[in-house]
Image (cartoon, rainbow, N blue to C red):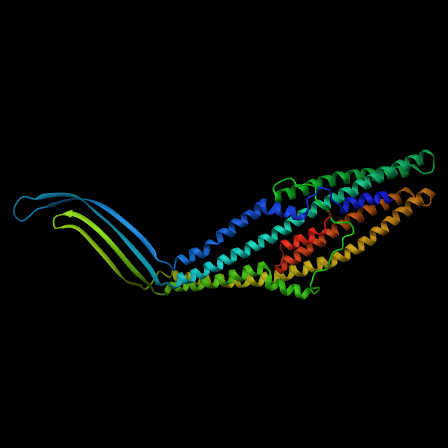
Amino acid sequence: MKRILAVLVTGLFAGGAAAADLMQVYRDAVANDAKFSAARAQYEAGQEKVVQGRAGLLPQIGMSASTTHNDSEITPATGPGRDYIYNTNGYGVQLTQPLFRWQNWVQYKQGELQTALAETQFGIARQDLVLRVAEAYFNVLNAQDALAAVTQLRTAAAEQLELAKTSFEVGTVTITDVHEGQSRFDLASAQEIAAQNQLEVARQSLAQIIGSQPEPLAGLREGVALQRPQPENIADWVAAAESGSFGVQAQQLAREIAAREVERARAGHLPTVDIVASHGVNNRPQPGTDRSEATSIGLQLNVPLYAGGRVSSVSREAASLRMKADADLEDARRTAALQARQSWLGVTSGMAQVKALEAARVSSMSALDANKLGYEVGVRINIDVLNAQTQLADTLQQLSRARYDTLLAQLRLKAAAGTLGEEDVQAINALLAP
């Protein structure tokens, strides 16, 4: 029995000597995950918003040039007329410096907010990557644990089947024991095939994130103790999530951008003032005028009077979108609070479940030993032993899953509060077998 337990525990909590750990897998994902690469490119694009907004406050310089073919006939009062065929060439440079364009200033402030929003969204992508990597990693470990458990169950069922056949041959049991043993062996064989398929699916899911087939993975150390989240108060985590969640921060920025958009739309009713400076040269090779050159500088005032109602319509649209942003922000706060509560309960209930399943594992082992001994002395039947074997395998699988779910809940709790980062990956990595 001790040998069987050692095999099961090894399958549940130990990794290979050259196994890749969670930190290595996470770094592979940072370098190769397509979804994260897209988020990085989106972040880099967002950095240009502030540059684009600032451009509306800076001088605009343009140059123009032209050439015109002319064919003129001049007929004086007396004498014959004369044809003039020539080209008129000209070029000029114009500088426009906005002095008062309120919509441009508002757009510049929006650009700053949009750049900050891009940074916040990239923070969401980083947290999402940590969660996806950890979930895929633990899914592989859990699938390996499940396969180890059902393989051992199949081996134990085969041994019990052979024992039942031998006992039937000597007349100590009925054919029913043999049939029951065969049934459990066949069921365990089917479960083993399903577990192998599930392991392959889990490995391919991890490969999708890291861009290559995963190496053997390090498992949790035997007897590892899970730590309670700090602070140990759900209200503190909910408050942190309502203010610090990346989702809440993003919606706060989106709301501010929407408010600025209302201001920018209403600025369409305001006049604009620019400094306009120009310099131009015009060559006209015709009688009396060969070349002209002019330089000018001045103020240009534009006052909008009527634009078909478009400015008012855009203003109303922007006001409605600001109200939508207000509602989205409130929804983001409630969602963050709910996620914090769910994750907190996932951690606390998960730790309690792990403790209960550890006790159930000891009880299941004792029950299996007792049923095997009772079968040998004739006070238990074959089905009792088979049931005890199945119960132990189920308990070990549930214990494995509960450990991984609790660790994931810890990460989700940090994500809800907006504090999940690489250091949390390192903390979990320290729990893995070297």
